[in-house]
Image 1 (cartoon, rainbow, N blue to C red):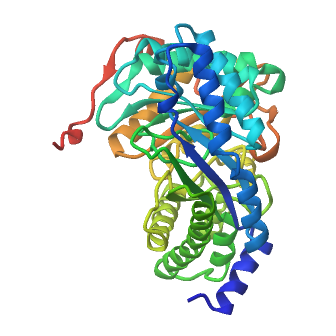
Image 2: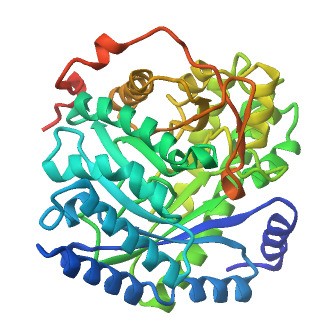
Length: 454
């Protein structure tokens, strides 16, 4: 039973502490759209998306009005397009035509992003996979709502270094293709290790082939709520600190569970998962960095940062798992630089470096996220950073990712402006020693010994 105190408490979290449902993401399988004729394939894709998702935005708005819970984004994820386009697409340009179709469909149904312009190549690349990856710069330059991802490694298969090398080149080409907008295209491109099939958060969302024909996944967020709760236990011991985080995460996840259940019932589409990820925004008071500083750090990046983040991530997951039978996606804490005012301030103060961020990714939900670097950074250096992050995911049996933005024409000390939820970011320095000989080796880094579990 929900009592009046809980209703009042939830209202307070919404009104004063930036609690929101970050996204309702409708996953749509496009497997039944596969066709060897490209025009027919595009027609089927457009028809399927605009039919299944026609009520997504209006349903989200109705739930917002009825329950008073802000739902910031309504989004779509689809089956990886490298699979859907394999029979019809013989060139990268063929895949770009699908990107345009997806963009039109997203506009028609009113969503802000559609994820799944993706390829899964952790062990090897088909011709279709490679063509899709090579099409990414043009696809992201010519569309507004497409988000792209490439899974290049996993604990089970190792790291596909041929794909890592190619992705470094593609990130650089995407930056060049969108340089008039501070290389914005790279903000919609994620390179993954151990990518989950049910992630509702962009830019890495796609619908795995083991999923149903359509599914509702919800992503909730509440850094501001957690920070406010921790203010009440300043100076207390770790036991009280952890209990507070767990209880707060439970309450936040219950809000997501409510919204997910309502959306599922109203649209007649199965509920998939709730993703409880502390996903910050540029808004003041909606920062993961500020949570870590409330825990006791002078600035994020100070000694103790990785331990504090590990504790936060673990307690968030423990609280969330108790609140829903189906917690999935990434779930935990995001540490993007551009979307978190506290992280931006820490970079300006000199406490937060790329190397420290990499250490933090060992214990958080996602990896090096929304980090602007000098536009002159070489493709091989970008590939090296990707490889390092993929190794962290592979060895630690966790999802991790890289979303780097080499901002063409800008260098350390400059600012990149992305707008909206993507925010802005200072250009961070990158280690300038080369790794070309390492990246140019062909083949695959083998899976770690603990991957053999059959």
